[in-house]
Image 1 (cartoon, rainbow, N blue to C red):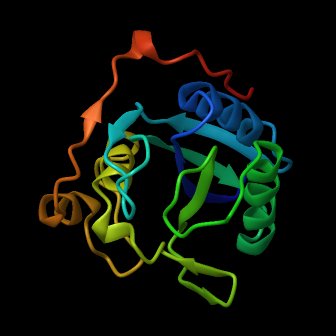
Image 2 (cartoon, one colour; image 1 turned 60 degrees about the vertical axis):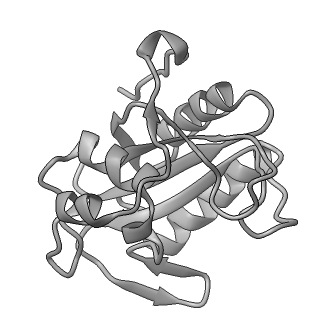
Length: 172
């Protein structure tokens, strides 16, 4: 399948986060016109924003898709809704957060979507999983994700052992 490489960030800190992420990855693998290429390891980190909430579990996936960026965003939000996502507090706890981080080498400035993700360079829990997927990855501006990771503040990122993570089905 031809298409664009899209990178999706995943996060959860409510309702069994590891299972939330595993089910979300299965849902991403089942998206129309989309193939799951790879998934990163999962990481635990302190929450951004209010600290009176559980630590987050984060990861990323690499997709190949022919869905346009806004259609992909619609699918991500649909999956979040299926997982009981409520948007009641900025940077608050959530069952599932799916962010379109990169969409090929495209820059998207739309009221509903900014790609690359606006906070990409500030999030070690996003940058490290991206590096695990593609060590040579660059942003549309040409910046190395590895260089961004080196400059990023530490958020007490801890890689989870594979045995702690449920298996995730891969698309064919």
